[in-house]
Image (cartoon, rainbow, N blue to C red; front, side, top):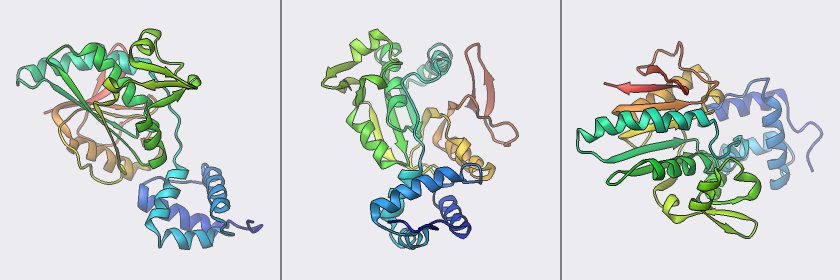
Length: 273
């Protein structure tokens, strides 16, 4: 049972400092209730009476720290989220990349879905590329997240009926198998995706991406960490490549090397050096 005063102002400062150091996620007074609620649940699960006692645990136990980082991560996503992004992918980004890559005799499009949550984004990308990349073109997709729980859901590729409402009927029929309780992504779509754990605060172990999706993730970081994350993306991308961020996010004023691109469908950024 939790103590009545299980979470103090001192605890808040300790947790926000630790979480910022470990993940780059910046908790302020505005989103403090999210931290308190997630912490309350975890303390009850571990039968720990105070935030101070739990803080002592996660500063000594890296595995429990990972579990807590998983618990505080907000995960909200759906298939074909923000359709204009995918319209631009189909009608602008892919034609530009294919023209440039064909000249180099490179027929592989490499994509990173950073902050992939439960997998809807990378599976959407995989389905779209299955439709729009003719032979001999192929796609390789890396999908990463800070949440191990989300990655397990993504790898399982099962979605309840309520979770596939954004999937076009022809895609649902072609790329999913209906199973008890919902739908499962077909292996042809799943096989081109590699799911992996990654903390965006750290440099990427991957290179040579043609497209990076990192949507609705930067908003959880302050300006310093945002700049670090964006610079990590730059280092991981090909000399001719594109970056997607959330529709409410911007690199304006960040002094990055990316070039702003406005299409008739949406805005995005490109590395073209």
